[in-house]
Image (cartoon, rainbow, N blue to C red; front, side, top):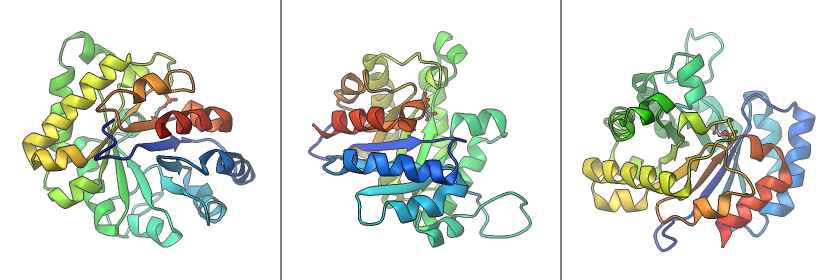
Length: 255
Ligand code: PGA
């Protein structure tokens, strides 16, 4: 990453894992490992763990995120959580448009865009996930897919809000599969995303925006992925559930 203009963001995506006592234990184990981090450290925990996590990170440099939020402020949306509800709890970040949400829960670029606007209006820092399917990569349309997602997901966002938005490039074929994109593939895609942002919001915004890589990032491959100039951190699933591994990734992002 370009350290002169951006700070790496290392975010753990715990997905549907950990009860409250387990969450507290994991955060306690992460605390000393994050203490001298030269990057932003975030844990995105299940809704039920948010309050526990917010209390557990008090006085530390760890930030708490949720894994989704609804686009309306309130109303008849059974099972949903609004951005304001997250802010009131002390939550700072929210993951939006994760491929598992798109794949299993019918989320579309249109609803991701609406959620993004709601999250930004509430003062949350969104982490918006984009990425191609294996089939799309094999057909040679990775750039088209990323371009389309960025144009739709970030439609109507102000340049100031775009600066506050973290983008996570997550090739769907690399998520939870143990099959990581090569550092060159990650760099190529993150650079392309930055170019798309430049074409919409201008070069200044594109230089300032954080573009993470996500998909089987772990203690072993993090340093190489993070050495790439356009890879500004990581969104980490499996490896974020093991404190020593997450600690190694924080270390790799801090050099
Ligand atoms: P993974 O998940 O690190 O387990 O591949 C990444 C993610 O889904 O954000």
